[in-house]
Length: 243
Image 1 (cartoon, rainbow, N blue to C red):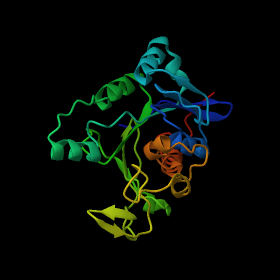
Image 2: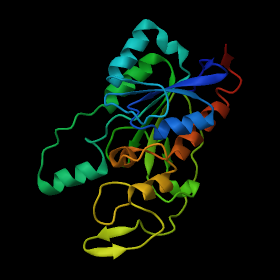
Image 3: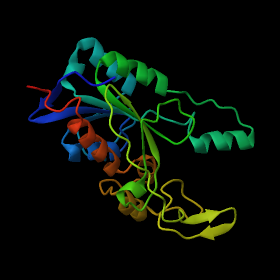
Image 4: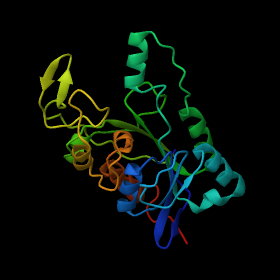
């Protein structure tokens, strides 16, 4: 399915709604691609670099759809919590015999996004989250110091998939009692040779937050800058601009 709704603009920039926004890694990329960005997150995010609202993301989306205000947006990006399906959680739960009590927010997020009638992007890390892998991006594609593999489901539009470049080496850190060096840092967790806050900031191109938790959850802005440009220049939406 292709995006056929005209791109709505605010002050000559299309408007994007950033759900589950965290500290704004995705938001900054869309901003650089040419969007005006508004974020929503259930936690306080004082480091978020754009206007945002502290609230339940799905409640806000439902309110916008019901009121018709959703029509001011050209696109929605959503990064619902992935603990139920992410590779790290699944592997840890299985190895230790734990039950999986995490809630899957991907499906209800998709249902509301489909109801909105807008083009959208759902982002998830590698794992078992039930999304289409319409795009898979990696830091090596953009010359970054972090791999940060992420999958993206595209709703209402499509674009070509870039080639996944061969990695130049390992992620630096300890593995099973052995230390490995490499061109990438581990931007997650806090032990075993994981990256320092300054190393994560440099590797991902994020300088507006120094909170470790926010950095470990963020995606490099380069990813969504690429996606934003792809959306705005795709054949299905090019030239379809509403005042």
